[in-house]
Figure (tube, one colour):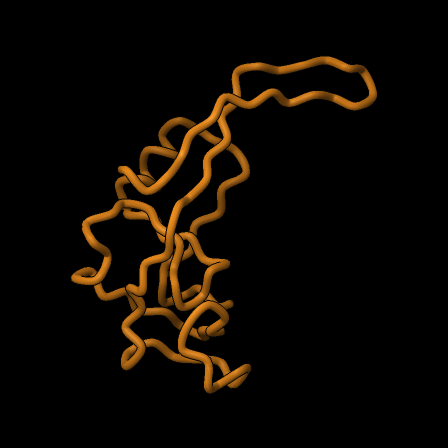
Length: 109
């Protein structure tokens, strides 16, 4: 994947000062307009919006628009990071905490 940056991260406990150095931080670069706007269901919030802040009741991704990326930020609703099933399985296999995955049709926001 060439659409994200990966950085070494230090997590520091503000009370004890203990530092943990075995963490990574990442930044997803760019936006991909991969929502199928005809098949997705939009919430009645901001109904005229087509990019950046669309609220979906149910999202349908058009795989032909994903540019072959396994992870990307959705251009129509930038608060959504879309991940391929491969990425989801790799995260779950490694037991990485703090990640919540929704099927596109179940996601709203």
